[in-house]
Length: 628
Image (tube, rainbow, N blue to C red):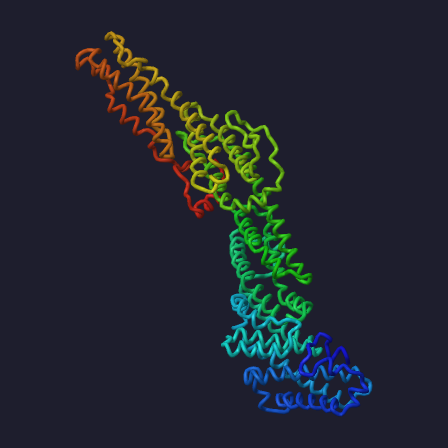
């Protein structure tokens, strides 16, 4: 009877605990005290029976809380006073059993009414109490829904009344009413009935939201059997569902649960744990994706997207699912983060292996860009967009072991004694692996000059990608400066090997005096070497416009300017005009035009002048395997 009829935390009302805690002889032996008890029971009976749905047709079709707010407040006050009377009657042996029986029946009737009201408020306000509305309006409900445990019911009722008179909206009134009813039912020993109503309605709302968001329980085998295109769509849907779930669905329900059951931590947590079970399914999916055996190149970006989503919302996850009863959700989210990070590291290792295992011996005609370069840079440019997340993931990754990479001209990224961020070292290492692989492929050119042009082209493409992406902030200006020097070095080697004979065919001092024979021989050597060099280099490719212009300007300064001086000085030396035409085949203007037309060949399918700077293009390139 004690556990059913009262709760020791129930606050006192107009009948104070001090006045009713006297010994039984003084309490029940005094007519005035007996009259006080009878008056309290009678007053409670009047309002409780008025709203007995079984005794009144009007009460059966009308809502107490919507019909008369002040009367609803009085109803709650009377129930709490009745509960105090029952407490006193049970605790004194000489109490009147009939009064106790009457009070108990009134309490049962009152609880039926409050159950009905609780159900009606929850049902009729589904729209106003949906998780999104609750999460966005929570700041307004706090002042009207949260009460001090030490505050008196009169203060609570006055607070609610003031808030209503100030124009409190339907949303806030509904939460306030639910809290008053829940507090009353819990204090009166009817917590179970209150909880059952709340769970049945709110769980249906949350389950419906989970269904609409496409959150479902999937097995590992189901995920593994999905084609990547289907799995990719599910990942995109999950990213949206996770955001909405954490911003509105579960956060809104957490707020509502905290407000309604503020008087009991255990009830609040058990209710929310039961209602939010679907959150476990939400955070299981990333782990399943991380474990899939399918590993297309673009998978790493989806894995990083999911890692980012959970990481960004981690504070909300810990706040919403803070209790022991919801710890499974936190643990599942944490486990997914661990699995996703492991997947990222594994996929990065696969990417490095893809570069190192590329065994194609085909050469790109005229130099140009290798597809491996385009593929790798698209991949790394997209990775750089996840710099902050990668920093978290890579920071605990062991340093890269030194290998026997062929690096005759590249400095190791970790050769510097100064410490560097882990992500900088890792990205620099991956580019080093790429450049060393390209160095090996350059050996397949029979024309050594083209091997240097090939290296210059591809390193320039790497640099262009770094300058125009977040790789710039990861690798830094010093890294760029070192590799710009390499490009200049390879471009100079190309000029020396491709055009060296042409440069050497001209005298060191083009204006020095010459005999007719010497002049004729010099023009003859120039004609032969220039024709031969131009024939070989006319199909050379320099996709980058900046590098293309720099090489042409450099060749022009060393060739056209010197040839012009020689031509102007010695054209007349070879003989008259008819004789000169046999030896002087190129004017300086013609030589200049030929040089300006260098490297303008249309790039074939195996190379590209530039790669798109858009993420969509980079992602499309990821789908193209490297088979060059």
